[in-house]
Image (cartoon, rainbow, N blue to C red):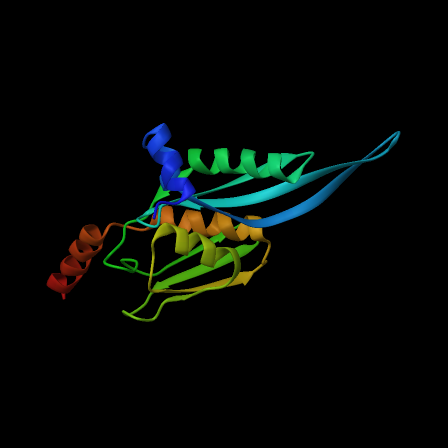
Length: 173
């Protein structure tokens, strides 16, 4: 039995955007006080990923939430990060500070799952990381936490590079 989305993808061909999964992780109402009163707008923070090593996040602002989500999704697809996976986990642990948020991400053994909460969990799930432990320290502002998480994933070294570094350190001893 084919679903409606399968029919659409067959009808319009394989679209590169269709492989991404999007998740709205945070919305908020913002207001600007003007002479006539308050102008209400909405922020939406969206994470997109293909569950196989690519993930991105974007922030969109608009008068209505659906428009903000659409803008945030477009921005997230522009800012994709390639995650160097080592099996189902990360090659090494990393700590990053961005604004007031500190993010600690460590690889975990097979079967551990994703031990992280909030927006960090969404980024790691959609990035395709299956076994990892994450901790958010300092400010828990979702925008700063996502930026710190993406910065940590950008700074990760590939598994080959990290194994070469470990071999060099053991040969020097």
